[in-house]
Image (cartoon, rainbow, N blue to C red; front, side, top):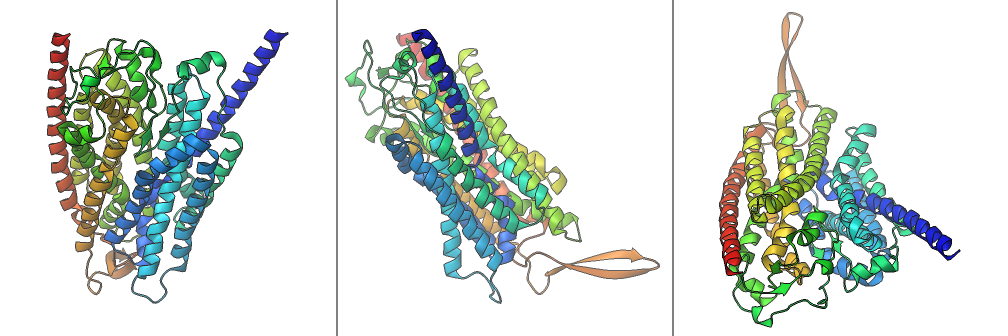
Length: 549
């Protein structure tokens, strides 16, 4: 009888876990809309007559909402569970997107451009959308990590992250299937379609306690909160038999130190979810064996080591390039479409925008998965440091920028967009495991939090540069406010004029943004050189460590 009751309880727990997983995927699917900004940004700029630089500031506000709110949401979800973050996510997303929609619908009347007050409100709304998406994703990942045993945790958290990666694709497909060319309806879908699933999550996204035999393997560890910018991992307690050498606390910080830091026991590692490739980042310690020794670098020592600045610069360059393209691919699509289509069709142009967002989302998703497989193959089969994967990432960014420079038609822009998505996803899929290799696991969340500020710097720099580049190529209002097309009708030529969406936009093809892409191309080449240097240093340190042992 006792066995039957226990078996029944296990089945009920399985049902609850499946429901929690499904709810977490739904919440994550509603959390990644920050990447869809470029699908409506050009229309927003045309409607409110704001410059490309101002559009980039609005987009960057969403990114800031993601990168700066992670630690706060992490502490809340660890202490209070997913309920408060889900409520906060629903409110932030609803207010943010509905506020943008309302200002889009109201327009500017007879004004020359949007007022300073309204522009500030737009920036605030953008910040709320990023903060809300971060809260939802953190709650979903944390709850999933709590609810599944180590054997299944990597797979389940990766499944949740897959939903996050496909978010932009899903909403873009939904809006442009039912409301093509209707930006107001698109924003309404974003407001309701992101806020309502968070409320559904309140009912089903709840941690399911592990059975005693599974809970024992997690003893001493807190769950993980993950998002694009911040990964929160509680500091592991030292298990019986672990060796800790306090003398490792020195001011030197090699990539793969032969000095002994904290020895990570195989059964002591919490394989929880992280941004991009969960299984790779936190389960890779299991594959390195009990004899592997990780450094323990954090705090002041982290800021005094050159390795921290090396990874910070690489991530700033690559993530900045990615955010620049992601925030402006809609404007790129419009410029290329207008250049090759004398008669500008708003609905047709918006379809090309939606296509870029969908391709970008799919590439981002695929990059996160593929780089994990490549990283494991590099480490386990080739016996090379994972750092060499950064060379692959930087190379993908170089190829994407070179392709974007070469593309002169909106019909082939998808190639550059796909490559950029692969590169961006691969970046966030490879860095967590490398951070653990370089600086250790004990203070991983603290170290990752510092590194995660690099996209803010790189994204701001490159995005504002891109916006300024577009603004300098905006044609004079009196000379280029319309397009002329000479068509044949019977035996005579007639001149047909069609107004462009806005005199504040550039529609001169790739000439509008060529300079910015050339700058990011050179920057990514520098990133490749730094990645190769890091890989060589890492390999030499590994050899020295092997010889020392």
